[in-house]
Image (cartoon, rainbow, N blue to C red; front, top):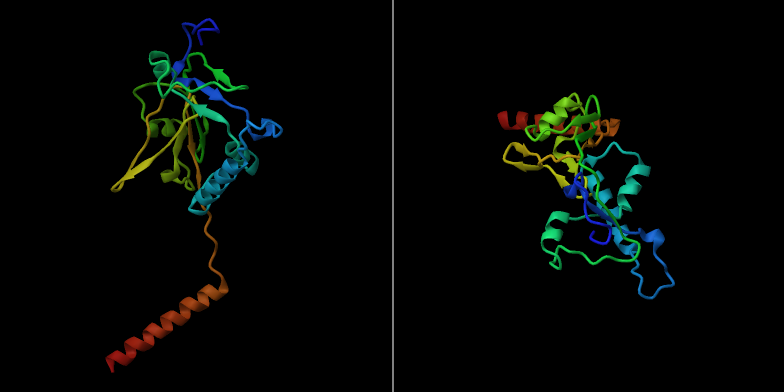
Length: 211
């Protein structure tokens, strides 16, 4: 940062991110290069598990693939500048790109909301108020899977306490994403036959007990 002349007055350090070359940019001929294919396979498996558990996003497979191969590293530039050389101060590698955006003033709301759009940021607004500003949740919204992607690339999901959903704090430049509920398969003829058989068996047991 110092070699680049320092930060400008309009720099938004909370949105700073570190971008590293993806697996496609890895030089396989370099013995010091790190093969990240195994890590990418783990990301793909985790995404499939989330989809199978009901957290099915409305994004297309192409967008999902971009998420899987994401090489954006969430950093805390404020903490790094205050404590250089600490564990938060990452070592810069060849090909790394440090991005510091200007002051951001909007919050993007996408996914299963009635009117996806960007809303002017206000520190007084809560997560649900931003969703309301986008028309509110749709009927198919998977509310428990709602999460927020911050400007620095880090992601935080909603949590649940008892019967209440606790949503993460919203910051300037963040994007709120509301996934879609997993579609339920309609009951087949065999399924209805199975239910009918079970009901008939239960009725027979009740009749035999009443005799």
